[in-house]
Length: 288
Image (cartoon, rainbow, N blue to C red; front, side, top):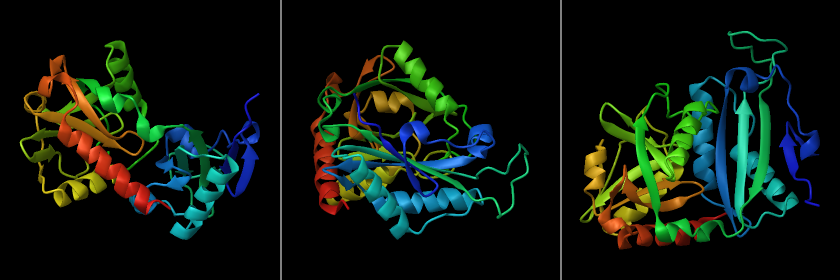
């Protein structure tokens, strides 16, 4: 029998069967909550500080209080990793506006404490994903999400629908397109490489400010690559030498086909493989 996970709920570590929140929680009723996912490699947290900074920003944008300092968040993350014996995997963290005791569109006052939940997902061999050697295939779908994708909310219905469209098409993911330009993947940032140049959409309200994105672009510049931040079309990406996505759990993943068109011969290229290697190497070194 599988050992029950330990789940963190509002200060307590509970067996997963006992981990519950109220039906009146605004996260459940209104998707009024934010989340972060931090990868764990060799029992250590990857780019933890970046996730804490983004969490604080998401909470501030929604006028929610941050229930913990970075040091407290770190202690909770380390404890749940230890309790669940995670070597490689992920820690999911969610903060909602809490349970005001009834349903109302108006935000409750500061007397209502936020709901805090953390759980782990064990993914042995997370960094050695075989997909990194074959690459992903993606399709493009219209981006019909709300206007504040920079806030990492739990409102993930359309990204889930876009992921299902990809699945039905027999591919790995969807790239979302708005006004003729790629915004991002369902749960990742999108890029292409032409020559020595990486092209990716600039940060704005249109896309999530990826923690992995920031690190990878920093390493790319250190590796003497050029980075151009601008919106691009599906056609531009199809005509590229290489394409890829980044996320906290996929790290750096090559994209070898877009809407049925092979990118760079249809096999992962050297530049993306190198970026993945550098990213994993540097992040393992800096892991906490």
